[in-house]
Length: 390
Image (cartoon, rainbow, N blue to C red; front, side, top):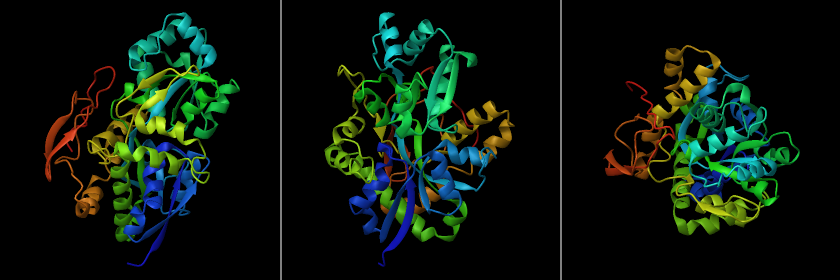
């Protein structure tokens, strides 16, 4: 098989691992590919490089292609999310000064109770709280807004600012923000520098949130189906490899290299293992499935997830909800996923949509190869999102 070079943009985050590992561990080569991995400084850069043809594929925030389909933002190129690269993996952190006030009020930083953390924040507020997120259309933004609504934090009590992930700790240290929601390892870097403490994992708000997707231009997907299938299979195999606990040490070493994250492997290993250090004093918390790449059909692009994102964005932007729902259904491409990964014997659910938030424990469901166990996907407030007929 002739090797073909495919370019792919990414942000230096641990959840870019499936693309980086696909190249470094030979999964791309096995598909006759060489991945030209392009590290980008911000999410707007990644979006623009993909939309304008600078790269063929991208590690992209799951809400970006949905927002583009709704006509929001400065770029409208149709983008397809052909698989989910990662589930969860975000952290919410606060400045050391705010952490000290929370502790003085009796909050114990249990790292698992979004309602208690929200109540504690409300009890110490003395003005609007400035939160940093990596991009306006991001799961970080959606999780925060959902959390604020559930705990009674009013819109005038929180200001959300956009800060690229690698700059988040610096912004916290400079006092530009007092809190953040960001992907790892950048929350842990704030802890390492003694600038703040971690308050919650994103999974405490939504247990199984689609975080990053493998995104391609829709016209490229249509004209290059062979190349698309090869890159999808390479990153799917990388995600499967990453899901094995024995892979964590090697994966952390690969990601730590200067050309990728340029962060100590020990810090990267925290999110891969789910053993997070939440304070400069070394307090640790274990979060099962803190970052998931494969298990529980993690890579499957559920249309119901796309619909949830669309409804959240549309409500905030004042868009027609029915039109937004219709537009979103063409973004998460479960049809392409099924077609391209069939030869990899990926286990796929029988349906392409589900009730989001309804799974309380690992649950067997019908699949094309027998039984598939879906993982818990609850929202912290117990609500269930029904996407309607698929």
